[in-house]
Length: 355
Image (cartoon, rainbow, N blue to C red):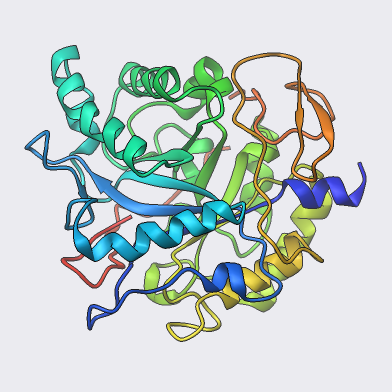
């Protein structure tokens, strides 16, 4: 496969949860658009929480319509107009959202309705399901099916498992088996924002990613999740080591899925003053020569052979299990690695919000 095809596939995904500094000043994402040498493909705004009151949906500690988020939503619309896909992250380390959705149908409807409305009101391009609490396989399938039915085939659905969960169902924060989910609903899942940090994965060398691919996972569906700053969680990998590993993986897997970073506001090396420099470094390795955001084709709708526009504007054939340029294919099969026990980490300046 030509180098340009590889470059058009690898995603650069950034989570954006800490939207304000300790003084209440808005943290702008516009440098991701205006600074040179950046090709971020997706921004995931976090974290949407379903609370006891079905109508009490919050983005971190405030309702999505709270005035503090006016500038945030405006900037995200600019990002969308610039070709960046914007998703919302549901759930995270603050438990409860998926427990409430994993109940009888009437309870599900009551708690799902505000999520549906928020997606519509904010014109999100997708939803990231970060299930860090026990949930049944049937429950997550019901949720995915409902989202797909409501928002159509072009709407992105991603999940955020810890890396160990793709190797061993017992090393899992979500309860359900991700291999079983991929077999049953892989055609509806664009990719996995896989957490290679906080003791659940290791991004300092390529071995764990290679094990996941050897297990049967499609490389285009496994995005390596990184902490962007040592303060954001354990497992930070210094750039000099990380760039070598990413170049190796990109060379080794022509359809390498890319990277995601948790999170934007203090990303190294620029830190709080220049957090966009992390994205510049990722671009230099994964999308060299690109200075503007390039979005993925729509998520797969279950078809086996669909002609669609690729990330570089060319028309390509999307076939699962074939060696063609595929952004979101329908691949998945069923390495056990030991991991530490549960962890706690916080990265918002408010009341200890979460990923």
